Length: 610
Image 1 (cartoon, rainbow, N blue to C red):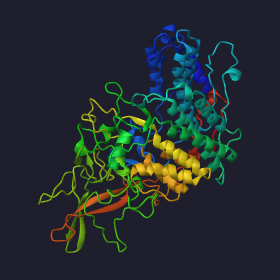
Image 2: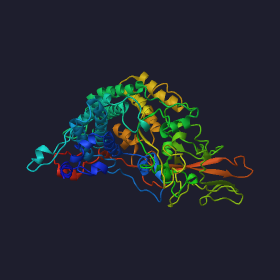
Image 3: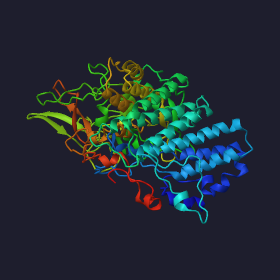
């Protein structure tokens, strides 16, 4: 009952379900000697907390990838989404914070464990608490900091004075996260954990680095806006004078991870595309992933592979729920380019408007940044050792010129040539049909039976990788005017990827590199927000190819006697599944404070534009 009163008074939205021990009276459970006498029980409570911190984009909610400009929905008819909701990926979970504080209180009071044995549990619990605060501040700005306090309502208590808290400033919230990380890093092991599922010292240092980078970016780029976003009491907005100190903190924390030696950029395979896929999507002998949301069968599994596997490779009825779009694919530069570090358009027609003919279905893609192969299944690329045939139709030659021919899925002409392949792409309101010309590869599980309803997949969801440490060090160095160091860090990532080194570096190079390195890893949305670029990219203009989802459909040339017979052409267009451009409003930089929270705690300040 106390827990329920607490939730109402601080206006907490129950975003995560409680299970196991936490379904019961937490005051009794977390002070019961039998919990703290049994490390199996302690680990069970911690496991519950780990299971409750999956926020933002993640592959167990594959539709979350279709919200921005990485992928699109294929399942059924058009998605008319345009604006971003005022609560998109909002986190405000004081239920979890209270549960963690109860756990910490019980740890302090128990005599069953010596101080050395307690350290790891203190470290992990405080890390998860800091992670929760980080997810709250990046979505809402400053939030009330309750530190170690466990609030209980007792009859006669002055609710207004003792339970209601105002929001801390955005700066204070980031400072709290950073200080917590600095205090607890040495409580945890420097060794890797099984499947990177539990936090260690380097996980904590990564959170410190990321939080400091976010604070630094907001301090710098918010102040450069014509109308900087801020509130009266500072719950939104960080003064630009603090940016240098935050960048320095981010750089030092990232360097600590890089120099710690526990993780390294994974460069085991000569095939750089396969190498990148394994660095992100294969647990065994992985050297890159520092912390991940792990899934293990039986028990907790993910449906991403089942929902998004190519139709031709499906092991059950489900497939093709969504997939990447041309906007993302074109970000991967050509390996041999005169303009490294920038996107490159795929050419479909020449200056006179004539088709450009390619020798194979994979020709426009196979000579690009190998991370494209490791991230996206493009036409003709293999999955599980066999090609994924994507063909929208044929290009036939007639007396009047070239003519497109399309048909139903798996259709063939009178000579046995494919018209439209079993996978599509095809314009249709039906499900189980590819509609953009691309499938996911990153996080798609190659394990047999992983796309079946009975089993699903054990694919993990990486939250921190060593490449992010390099990219944080790169960005922080660049912002501090240390361009030589910035070049060194970004080129380490590019060397592992298999693309040309940069000879000089710009801010746009950093934006580009993060997009291709971290696609589908819950970075793009937050990066554009902290750089104050989101409203410039997602303009709401239906003629803006950056704001609008785009497709690229392959057609095979069937023209006996013509020198181009057997070649391929591609047609680019806006994706009919996404008829409206993404429109990011200024109010979307900070989620709205729920009015129910304010009703229960009038000390909460509203966010800008609310």
